[in-house]
Image 1 (tube, rainbow, N blue to C red):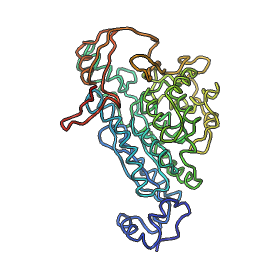
Image 2: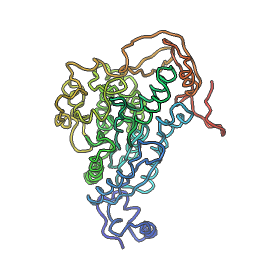
Image 3: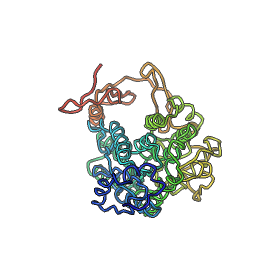
Image 4: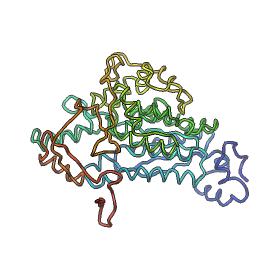
Length: 458
């Protein structure tokens, strides 16, 4: 018979305890789980290691550290993986149509494994764009003790004496098409931009959603911002495993953290860092899973009153590693707290409130990444919600990268991302043109025809 079961096996006892569960225990023993292992709480360790991108390439390594932390705290970890689609790799091809769909598949697969194997707790290691909101969605559905750990940003590349990111490669493609640089320079930038594993370095979707996870309270403060290849990431992963056990023992569930105030804090973090407009799409989805009322207009209201305080690419001058060295996301929170722009009492998985996290921030002397409220990067947040005849139900515009508040020009309409990309590289887009790409959103596509991706036409 198995050892006396832990009182924290609130779910997994139905899987492992009692005489009638002997066949299940026998199968688990076949892969190395001992009688003692099975008497402990079972904690899932989900990740999306995949060999199609650098963003998630460290997940196996981090999973081992998370598992060490869980075992050290008295739990039994069970590792499993799911899929991921790289926006950066697939962009400009029909493969990009799989990206948003992958969010739902990832959320569903995490939920299915956790429900099927009756996990007591869950740690989700995330990396590229859609894996982050998907993990949060799964945690909200399951509502078992758990957290999200971001595997970290890529380091900046170096070219011609300056830091560069993947964005510089995209810009170099345009420069090559315009004839302002040649093939050797394009190749040199390509080879220098991504020096190792990690997600894209600017405040694109991955780093935006990593920021969101800390302000939402689902990630332990300070853990996500550690770069992917920094040795301190292993310790952060170990600590995350131990933290998951504390959450389980205290019975802290995700929905107790995912309050309306937490979502407003997350929106403020997007606005204050010039984050990706995809944050709107993803936060609305997470809120729906958590049962928290949230609308697109909430983003406009909060962004209007929240200044940009972090100068991050693509709209600013720095990358995520620079923010980490300057004082991290807690420094951003400290700035927002000073202006009463966040809910200080919102709780986080590490047991502190966001206000306590902000007050504990340490600012690096002379840093230029995070501005003050008195002299912000921009007085208004990095996004706005618009309505008009093209988008009667609303659309999102990113303001952090430009000053233009209105524009009129001829529409250049394309039915696919590939067609638009070809027009750019052939120098067929002129200054002042408005590029419109149809059939790319969740309503317009994709649909698999059996021969390839097809779009729905009206």
